[in-house]
Amino acid sequence: MDARVRNIDEEFRHLRRQFAAGLVARVDRIERAWRGLYRGDLASNELLKRELHNLVGACESYGFSELGQTARTLESHASDGERQQIGPLLPTLHRLVCRACAEAAGALSNSRPS
Image (cartoon, rainbow, N blue to C red; front, side, top):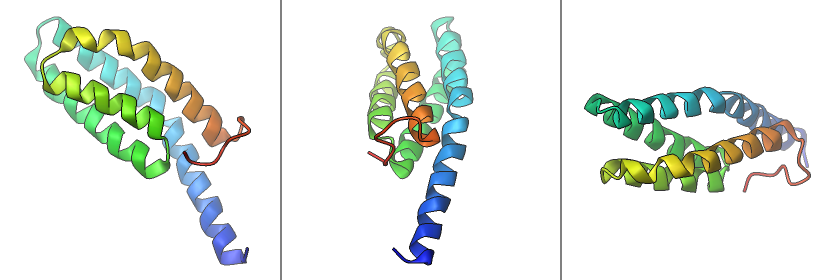
């Protein structure tokens, strides 16, 4: 592998770590929007859908496919007005965020993008 390819690979790993570092804040915003929606704040639904949509796209870009798929499922529930389906999936979202952070940090043996 030549130096240019190594530099690109290292830059991608760096960007992936930065993205993963922001995942907890993203999930916090998603949960706040979900709680607002559950309390009847309809504006929270738009925020929830936007946050989930952005998470889906970013996960696909950075190679976190399982996390992205879960976010896509949540986005679909939010778009369809199925707020009762969102809560049970939030623990899965948390677990996948933890896994993504560990992968990005290189803590897991399978640290390649999925």
